[in-house]
Length: 119
Image (cartoon, rainbow, N blue to C red; front, top):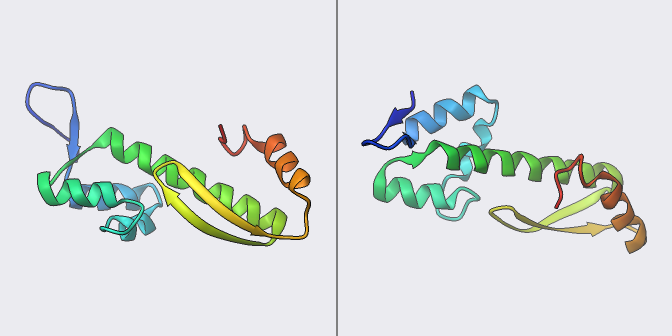
């Protein structure tokens, strides 16, 4: 499934292999994000020019997307109406529509930042 390219130890994946891996790890919905305006836009560009991406880049992206989704679910569970305003690589910006004070919001985030992988 994973091919080594040249003399380096860099493993490369084509589009079909990416799809297969995403299905195996239960993240097949991310396949829809590999497009010019999706969160996987960098993969889209690389696949269009080089036809393969490094496996470690795929792993990083999947982990970032998982953490972002987990954070959004946490925010929704604690504050209700949450809207994702912006997302670029590991940067997520959300709007929380709640009557909670800003201090309570940041307090809850501070208490749970290690669990949510927030740095």
